[in-house]
Amino acid sequence: MAPEPVAIRHAEPADVQAVLRLLRETVEAIPDAWYTPLQRESWKALFTEDALAGLLQRQAQPQGLTHALVVEDASRMMAFACLAGDEVKMLYVHPSAQGTGLGGQLLTQLETEARRRGVSRLRLRASANALGFYKGRGYARDLGNASSATGSTSCDCGGQVLCTWLAKTL
Ligand SMILES: CC(C)(COP(=O)(O)OP(=O)(O)OC[C@H]1O[C@@H](n2cnc3c(N)ncnc32)[C@H](O)[C@@H]1OP(=O)(O)O)[C@@H](O)C(=O)NCCC(=O)NCCS
Image (cartoon, rainbow, N blue to C red; front, side):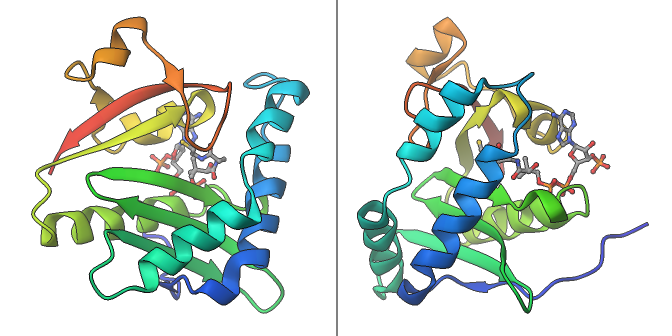
């Protein structure tokens, strides 16, 4: 069955606090089987108000390279996704909404926007828990990326958290 359509809008600078809360709660809920509590603490520590505010300010600029989207319901921010250049920088769906198709819808929108901007190959750093999700959407190990020789790399959003470079031809 097709997922329920949701209202996706551009992120705004005023969303910083709600998005920070979403990011922290989402990482906190990732099972220990994927990342230990210590690794999740390291991951969450990278979500600073300054970094996120800078990102949302850049996206507010007319010629900004960043394209950031949010989904919220009446009580909370449910999802956040961000494209920067040829890279999906962040994609987070609150645990209470995971598995409902939200992540897929956001990724599709970022891919559409990337195509519109002339990107032919979209890259991202996938955390271990999200590898299956991305592979199911056509992403594969990015052998063109030097760091993928080791199979993993540190994640922008994840500090010491190991991620894998993936890419998809659009
Ligand atoms: C990864 C994430 C964005 C996916 O969002 P979502 O809204 O749950 O995804 P959807 O409901 O659109 O899609 C779920 C699909 O992915 C699959 N999937 C999700 N995690 C998976 C995994 N670890 N292994 C295999 N498949 C997985 C589901 O089986 C489902 O498949 P289907 O579409 O064929 O039924 C979300 O789980 C999340 O925010 N995780 C925590 C934060 C994170 O790791 N973000 C990525 C940072 S790189």
